[in-house]
Image 1 (cartoon, rainbow, N blue to C red):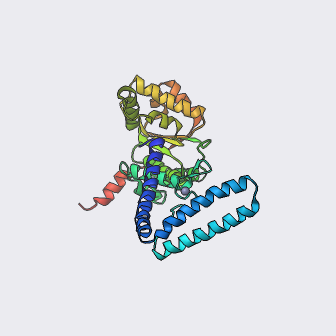
Image 2: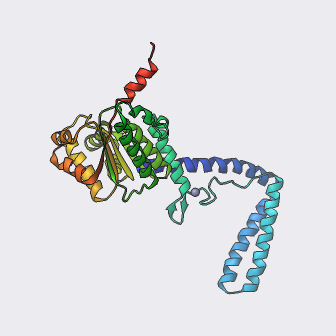
Image 3: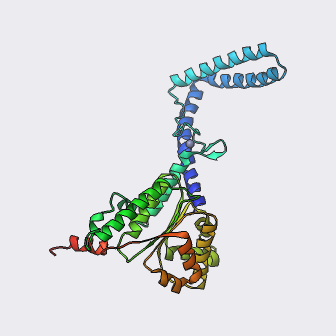
Length: 320
Ligand SMILES: [Zn+2]
């Protein structure tokens, strides 16, 4: 997973490269037009002279002269456009008419850059996870009917909770979710569906299996690699720690986990944690401090049913 800063850096690079290509193509045509139409260069000189005269005239309050100069300027611009049109030099067509592809409106990052940033994140996530397969639509509740209606009822409610979570997502006050339960019951599937939904809405999540997240943090701390990772985990719109409990843990990772959970709780930034551990196992492994933060600050949901991965495997291999 890449940091918010890197994501935006990439998004701006993509944006400016597209604009550069467009400008370069137009400049070629423009140069050719100037070479065959000396009048164009003359018009530019006249326009810049008028610009200077206009400034003086309007500063001295000579409104008559201002009006005449404006009229001349408009006429010259029109003449220039006509020549360029004759020479088939197109106007630059911006991808985003709101910011003219500068990426900023009124000092703020334009939505077009946020959309590109979302694409950057999704592309990055797809290199690690089967994001396209993990949608809400692809979450098949039929797999949860094997041991009575109980599991199906529970999982229907959890699916609804996840969908609503995306719909009303707010990086300042969405609740924290703790998904518990045995492996193969769809915790990662639903979490990735949430991540996709949140990205679609223009927010920047940070997702990773616990093992990867702690490797990122310890590399940053001890080798200087992945600079900014820990800060991104602290400040991103949504932090997702997948598979907590499967990582190699030591005092350092335990204290980092506590910091992440506690800091995000204090700053009211939402976090989702998936784990195969029970609350008692969490307390045994990470300490009461962390367990009590999770109990007090997270909406815990236990996934139940019969291992869906195994069911799918058996279906696919039936008759072999
Ligand atoms: Zn824009």
